[in-house]
Length: 241
Image (cartoon, rainbow, N blue to C red; front, side, top):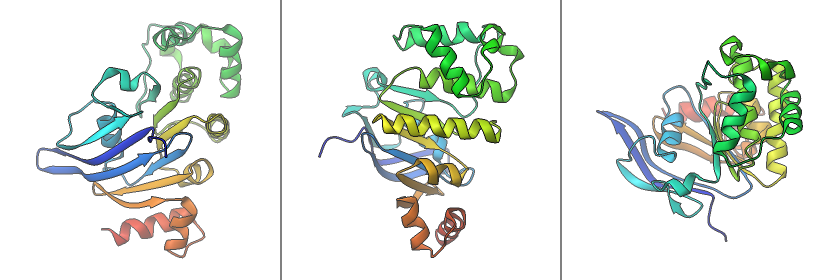
């Protein structure tokens, strides 16, 4: 079996006396989509910060494409969108996209950029507007556009649907499904169990820093005898309280 795209091996992390992650073991295989679900404070964002080497591990190890996460080259094939994404306020949309594509070593192609804006229901006129004039939803779409245009092998997205209206959420889900159909690997957090169920091959439920469940969305429903993933999720965290 090929090496997982991402591997968490016994990852633990504390801030002061607060244990945020406790012995997390998780593999994300190439070409699959894994959703991280959990209540606020469950450790989802901290796990991603550890993956991206934004904070040190207390114990354990993380590998990205077989390379320790501490090495910059391990992150060369991934794109990341943070939960609270903000773009430099003094840039226009076009300038921001062009800057990000340079960082990704991708060529700026106006037609592709316009097509991505249309796919996210973001007006092409926004390309010439300063980012400081964007609404929260527009800003989120801009961040998603930059990620999706990067043509990476691995996408790490923290609450990618945050601030999007229902139509934009639907458009973003379609783009995530397209990436998956192309064989890209996706790891994202979400409070929306509907998004997880529609897009993800597997879901990992974090609760109080531990893994309460790891498997298919359907398997989570079956385990707790529910037809609704949301109700199964609630029963799962109650069982691990």
